[in-house]
Length: 398
Image (cartoon, rainbow, N blue to C red; front, side, top):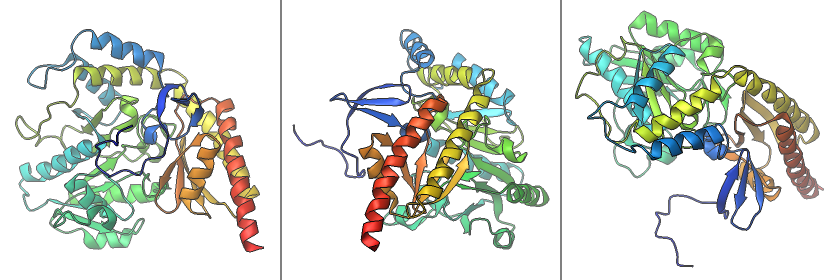
């Protein structure tokens, strides 16, 4: 086979999947893998979900794309449904999480501009954050490994240590427009932000005329057992970015905002050619049909409890492999004692897929449709992987 003509930006695992069924992926050679990565928290309803397949097929036979020069009925429906289920009044559709964050950043800056404060364009972010791969979002995330080699860092992002309220207060000035935070850091290692800290951020924003922006690209749309992670804290943002799970595997993102926060985003100030096209919003509406159905989020919470308890038992059994278990709902992270990459490979050898993250963590992100039985199957495979790694570690230390 001729070598692919791809950029060398991904270190891909040597697996080629041909099809998927629920929580399973099947390779070209017929091997079945339990998918607890979900395309990095994207396949919220698993693979080939019949309701999503039906919605996509039905729309594909009508119209694929018209651009935002015209009204898109599916956008109107999905935006109204998202607003009704959240704090928001306004929605802007995108193709990805990075674009949703770009829109959130622009919305926050533009808000201050139309309120008569053009000098307020700085946004406070937190160490360990990940907000995307565009020039603005890598500046917001602030991680050196993503910034290196791309020229001067985009101006206007002031980063403070994770969880350090005093450092945050010290960096807020007359130039600050907003505070941007993930309720649970995903790429940063599944690090939940305490409820009290989010409450303190809300107060700082209210006291200083700032906007509070939540990045729920990974946590949103049922992943934590609530429709949105902010519901756990009772803290309401002014702007929120969504993507990943909202499209169930189809590229779709959204920036949600209150009417006041979005007041500067008038005709011509922002745009997208593909964002919210008829195919994307048909799938987005189908995803929402399932997730807001009676009992679905309770199911997520119930299975998450089984999974969390099983992980805690594995931590007790293999303390030389698993240091900690973190997260909420089905956004879970195993902080490893061994290199996280070794754990990912050991899991893959047991036909179980996970996703590495920062702080030497392996993310476990099964589809939200996963059953308790399938969660136990995943735990059994993780147990085999941990057992092999534990034995290897004991041999090293002998």
